[in-house]
Image 1: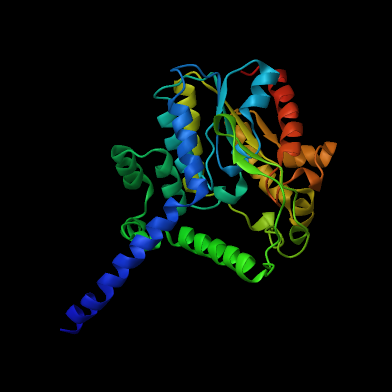
Image 2: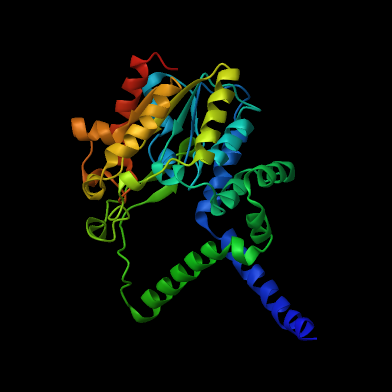
Length: 331
């Protein structure tokens, strides 16, 4: 009897939470950008691309097809997505190769997602782009641990982060307009928008708070970092997929702000692990962080936050990267 009573009370609450959390997710502008990215990709003429960029937000905040194509005379597309791990990148690439046959694929490797076996949030990000039941079913069956499959069936768990982000912004906007209160979070002037062929344009400049303990890398120690066997396995699947399709694969690690590198301990351990993996698989690899340490390519003013470039930094990165690809005769 108690169990029935509990169910009667709790079920309507869960249904209500599912509705409002799902609604919040639909208002997430990043999800809208993912859908736009996919729509733009599917609108391309089949087999019209020379080069495809894949990976996490560090990919779509670094490699701008307009700049790369201007420098190399190519046709490229940016298919990076927020928080994307190699398992999702593998599924993204498989989907992309159904309609395109690029001669080169540039895979961005960010160590922050290479040490995690699974992240439930990236699934919804991916499904925003590939709204196909067969795709979702195959992805969940292969990628999800059994306990995560159960959690994923409840929208109030899936969309909790979207809801909290949405409600926090709504409360902040209300306090500013109603009472003229200044929120604790720093406001940045400038513009962030979806741009050409999947790239995200942004001209924000890193806020002062990222120079202190709020910098996300303040406690990062490369000696404690471990390359996930799961994610390494999916990168190997990507290598095999590119090889079987005659595609030249390239690895790249986007830069983080110099102030972040100053806070990171033993970054060399992370670089060595990824570099050795690339060498073992005979994949060209460019780490912008070690390049910046050697050549002073970027200053803090070239970053939108502690981890992503703004457009002034993108211009520097893409000119350098295009020259590096030319030296390898890619694509």
